[in-house]
Amino acid sequence: MPTQRCGRPDDQVRTDGGGRTDGATATRRGFLAAAGAGVTGVGALGGCVGTVSLLGGGSAVSVLAAGSLQSALSDGLEAAVAPEVQVEAHGSVTVARLVASGRRDPDVVALADTALFAAPLSTPWHAAFATNALVVAYDSGSAGGRAVGSAERWFDPVLAGEASLGRTDPDLDPLGYRTLFALALATDVYDESALGDRLLSRDQIYPETTLLGRFETGAVDAAVVYRSMAEDRGYDYVALPPALDLSDPDRADAYATASYELSDGTRVRGAPIVYGAMARRDADAVREVFGTLVGGDYLLDHGFAVPGGYPTYSGEVPRGFRE
Image (cartoon, rainbow, N blue to C red):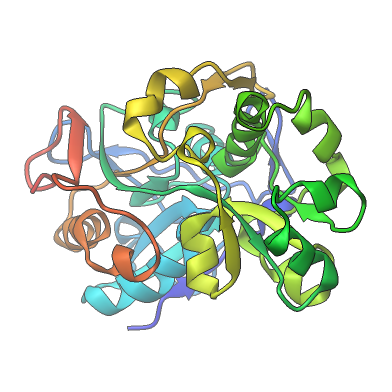
């Protein structure tokens, strides 16, 4: 069955520290108790047309997800499950705030940073199901992109004004604050001080779901993205060293020396990149979609890494949601 896509893009869903969402469509809250500890019944996914979540009487399983998961869920997951899947994607911080404030009531939440299940969400459980790495993707069709790809240090053409760099908003998604972490950690790797201050500006920020599309419009020559995003779209990229790319669990302590305070006061720290998901309704179709989401081979086809032993689970997982 076709995947339904809906919802506003990241640059139209902005949340402030008070949990409000400017421009977002307010939705009716439908939280009901459901079978199984920690599983919440949910209502219709606000702002969407055509299908509603299972509690609202529709046939689709609604998934509110990180922007970097959009392609994998809309294409790979769709083909792997029988139920109809309705995907809405934003930056993970936006996703967490939308759910925490009650403005979205999805059947499944999938985020690019498991730390967000603690705050701003406060969930009783979640599953970790994939990892990733930061890279610098570049447009080989532009002179600036080629300069980034051929430079001994990828950032030198950007510093020289020969190439433009795109990134995402650290207040809206983990990719944005992970970019800041990587540049903070880069001081020791490249022996360059204040590299983030010299490379970054507000006018280079784009929504995660459309960042790489800016190559096609000529808006940017290169962008800090997840490896999965570059591979999924077929773009060349510069691999960052493990000390910067947030992919190495053995470097967790070093990554944690970098931090960022979100606009709501939550402080996030550097850590290995781990994706997580939680089901919020107990139903056969939700269990099927959730189980495939966290355990499907489709993730490898879309550039994600799945370490041995994944998925792993934290908290009190309801019966039927753990492999």
